[in-house]
Length: 275
Image (cartoon, rainbow, N blue to C red; front, side):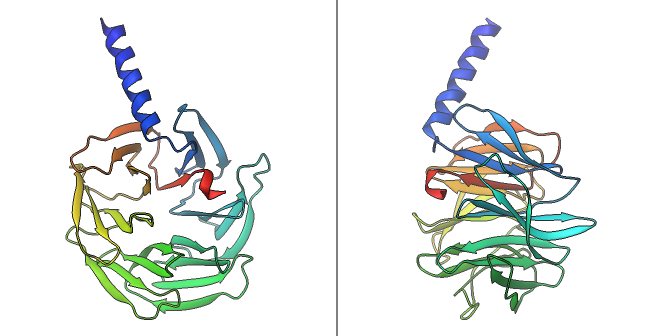
């Protein structure tokens, strides 16, 4: 009887995953590596192993995966070829010791990042040249770009979400957080909606102008949430060591995809359109 129940549960999970399938991979970081999870097969692989470090964000452009690598003796935005068997790390630009958000303007080959020690948002070329500090904020964390419409969204972790042009002109607060701090946010440019998780564990969403705020799921997991990614009809997020998936439909139940041995700090959805 127990075997039959387990088999049914496995089949249910397999069907659920295929409904969410984007024929790609979920990349995520823990304290020692960047991992790759094939959502269709649940096959796991280590892409890059490093010493005890923190990676809070990733971005992809032109066959390279960019990420911030933070450890005691090295703080830089780094990249490697993906997908590729050659995964040698290349330093793009040295940064401050507490970089958080990372985003790429693929139209202009610009790299943006936030520094939560100096409270700044900076930009450089994708080869690391022409570093420019664009603005000083209160507690900048996540950066997300709508490249098509030329809008930037920045999470001020203790207050709300800012919207501005790429030169940081015309800044406006479109969301005030009711549960803070907030350390993760993603944008669905197809739906023109933003998604984030507050400290109370609620996954919330709003239109990209700050209207129509909805609670997608109350996880009841109180604490810091560092990773969320949105693709298609599903939201992928982490809580402590767990990697989870839930439908965008309100009141849906989440599925645990994977449990790690250390905290999961960052999630990036790699799909065919990323190439």
